[in-house]
Length: 242
Image (cartoon, rainbow, N blue to C red):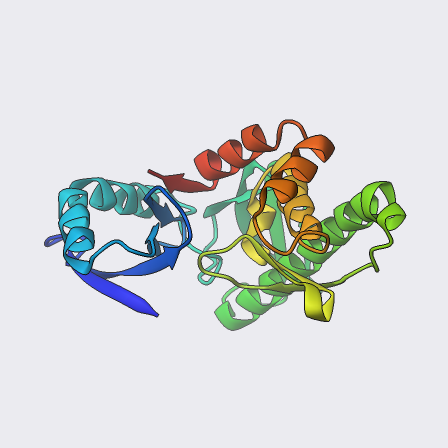
């Protein structure tokens, strides 16, 4: 993995920027809510140009990281605190811990309540929340994938793929046609369902068209004419991009 270190100053200090070389024409700089910074560039861009570009965008990167850190729910779900917030299906929700006779997680439109026999047990708090989050993600993703598969891909003779959920730093999803497997980022659960549907359709389409060819995008547009709007919403609401 190619990385480049930047010094953002006294507050945010030194960070590593992941450099991703792709078969693309434009440059894309993104700061994720996990505080990961990724720069995607065309294959032929020289190292010196990359350094100059990043130095010219230090202030923007620093501002995005500071903004995420100031938000009470900026964390990547790895440090749950009472009263903190996060995104869930496109909405901001508060996370609360409450004393109870048993350990469980309950939720409504505005909050997630973690009931604990011992609310001071931070390890158990984290474990319960992560198990609930992963289970919820699996239910939502599987439901949407099954719906799209039955509606679109079954008639094309595509075998229903296996779904894998994992933590991913820079991707919302990936498709491995050879293994008939689709992997989705568990953090995608933060996004609105419309955005989740877009990511799933994108990955399912790779079962028919492995590369990002003209045929791939034609098929994607036929099945979801507003996919660009959904992608823009995803980039704007869940990840800050430039």
